[in-house]
Image (cartoon, rainbow, N blue to C red; front, side, top):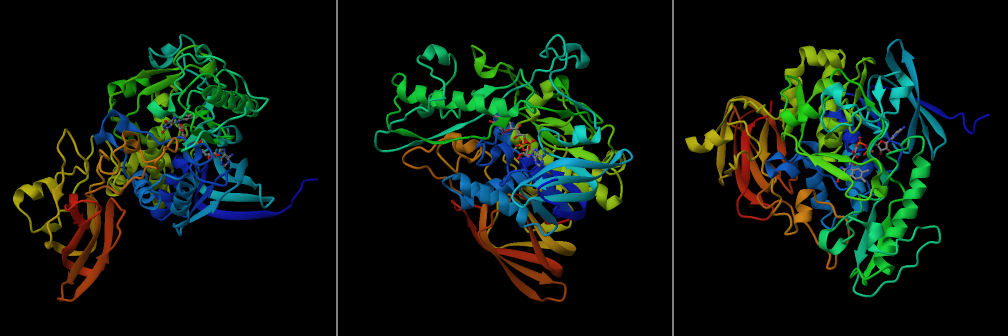
Length: 584
Ligand SMILES: Cc1cc2nc3c(=O)[nH]c(=O)nc-3n(C[C@H](O)[C@H](O)[C@H](O)COP(=O)(O)OP(=O)(O)OC[C@H]3O[C@@H](n4cnc5c(N)ncnc54)[C@H](O)[C@@H]3O)c2cc1C
């Protein structure tokens, strides 16, 4: 007997399992491109390791230079978060993620639903089933395509899709930083600590079950200087020598004993200058770095990243170092990560994003088809985000053509790349082609900047112009929407004086006085668009509190010209723009 017979069935185009940033962006992008999508997520909140349940900050290729910042949906999310959540509060962040999913009419969201079963039809997945914890209900989802963004590749053992665990040996992919022989070790899992600065002394009584670290010897090379470095305790890491899936609960409880012991060390074992700090939060849900990785049509490896391999099917990019942790984690007496610099930005091919043997299965996030070494870079959430958007858009292209992901590589890769560029994503080596139909009344040198295809700074050149008040744009043929690629300040210096918030606007700890972030100074906030149709009819379209970086403004049918007046930026006199065009 089981506790409930309650069952609900769905039939969709694309089913995404796992609602971390990769899964969320895969689902939203597929839905925006016309596919009927269901997103199944086992937690009550979205965001995976970035959610309030884990609180890992989003990092990305921007670490290798501000010009390499990820764009597309991750940028849209960050802008909405800065607008709605200037104090970087995690509950508001959860709500921003939730809104992104629930705003999509084509997207059904199933929270608290853990995927645990698969029905196959030949080589393909026919349906997946999840158990919803709070409603005691089984949800079965039939779909044409499935995207596994669960981190743990839950669909791999259930479907028979090929996958790997552990580290490749040096010789398999000619990776000098890999171990001599393959093993089953991985990077570990961590719980994070968030602290709050107050204006009064705070005490801390350690739980009896937590460890004691009486001196700095026991914390050798484990940076716990919150005030000086804002460290988020990523190094409270264990489980790399265990099975990070099946030993997860034991690893979890051991991590809690360490985490509370570390806080006790900071508060009670020696003077750390933390008298007025109190414990705000400890993550009872660990963040996982590594478990199963899929084998796709191509396995990205260390050499590809270091040598900047060019792929004809490039759809995303990375740029974080290969940040390879020692499997001993916290127990390693030293700094537990080794960094190898890749050629940043490096390309990620579409072939690394779908299964080699289950033809209707794609994946996004830390589980893509990459060796352990390459994954030590691609696992970073900025990269997972752009990969998620590429996979979701690729799935929508496949649905539109009634084909499989491998056919997209063969026949429709240009279409996929064009859609991603139109949506503001960056693919190194490719530039967006302007439509050529928009003719802004500007000097030739400004038009050259607008039409050069760059929608980000490059080689120290801003690639922006100042949008002049009263600008008229004529169109050589009637258009339905105006596309403006706006400047979100790739340096982020205008959103905060604090370097830590200029990377991605989320906090590790709550400093006193409370810090706030602002919208980018030169981003368009408001304007009035006057549109004229071929028969001379004028319509006025107000834009208010804009947070979009790629603003696709719908225009009346047969618009032949627009004029932009009442321009207002978020924090400066000037609105800066990369391109002005008709939407394709
Ligand atoms: C301690 C730590 C420090 C890190 N440091 C950084 C950093 O500084 N910056 C950075 O950008 N990245 C960092 N990373 C890496 C990054 O967090 C992960 O690689 C990234 O979150 C992977 O994204 P994902 O979407 O694949 O997986 P996740 O973020 O793990 O999301 C997967 C989601 O799927 C859900 N799920 C799992 N199984 C199922 C199922 N059966 N059914 C339904 N849903 C399921 C999970 O609950 C989760 O919400 C760190 C990771 C850890 C653990």
